[in-house]
Image 1 (cartoon, rainbow, N blue to C red):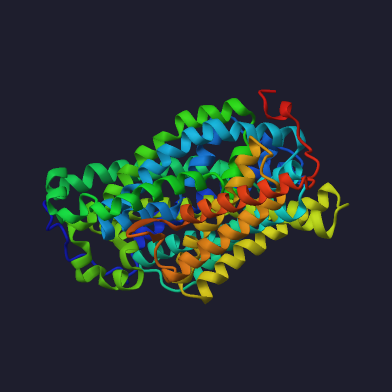
Image 2: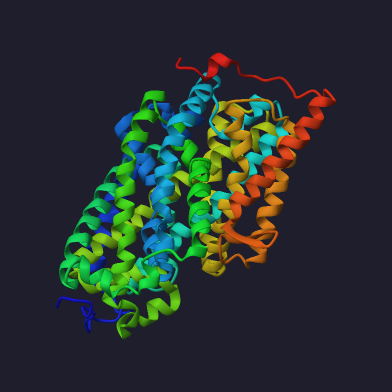
Length: 517
């Protein structure tokens, strides 16, 4: 059947599809094997944190490309971006310009972070802040912010797995628990090498899924013209009042993207500055992929899957997040449904592994070693990181199993607000020390408070806060408004302390550390 009436009387998602489940299981088994085999890939002493948590800083251009792609384009991206387009229309496309803005930013900034980190053996961004500003408290603030922002991000990967499992008729939390036990086991054994190797398979499966979707589904719906004709006009273009929200979401998200600990981990695991720069030229291929994924939201509107009784239970439970699974169930044979749903699940496991490793690195280096066991050995440090990665994973799992998924979504909104408040210490710190460490800490505290308050007034349901400026109201990304407050306070306090000639601490880095060497 073609045209927007393609919804059929297919079986309800509550019935287990054996074929889809078999294909899903085979691909999941494949990546599990790869996860354990990864420990023997580029053999090294995994009892050292830089080997377990950063892959020995030896990943070349191709591996880094897959790793960063697996790191940044997650299962929740695959589910949530088209869901936002399905529900909110054109506003959901803010994800495209923000990835385009992010890569020039990375090209300029991240080679500097790599150079100074490589010179001094830094494993986390908080390590850099500690050395640059000689401040344990500021480094702890950066580390705690990174861990707080990462936890709900991991939990949301589980939401992506839950959605596709439910779409195949698998109910209950046991399959999710089994998947994360397997993830925890191979991550504990192989460290960052496991998601790096699995990311290659994950990206190939996702590309195959998206290419099939953009060819097969439009053909069944009568072409792209009919798809866009079926979408309500108000969902095709931005309303005038959405312009500032769209722009600030794109800019704020671009600035925040590579501040997340898992992004920094991907950057620092690369073998050199040139690898990072080559990747910023190659990673926009993922932006093209993201654009195609976003259009799936419009396809779901045109296919009227939200009106089909067969998928009513899924939409009732997961809302717009069920749009893509329902679309695939409706458009593809069972074997390809299993293939595509495996892409989503594997797309959850890769970033979840990297995120848990990144959070473990932060805890080990900037809490355990800094405050609890300053003289710990390298082996002890690695062991603590491995255990911490387990705690992070199962904490996220408990969050999803025991609490409502809406809480994870709310905290993820907060995560974006929070992580952007580390921008002054990390990014500006790469270029100047004119901001005093006490000023940066005061700015961070202000940004965290302002951003959290804005999210609270929005009932943690939306990232856009209507800022009142005199008689005008400017809707914008709460994280960006909070960053502006952060910078204002940091600059003001730093200026006062400079006039009072308050000591800013000893900088452990030198100008040469940021160069091409």
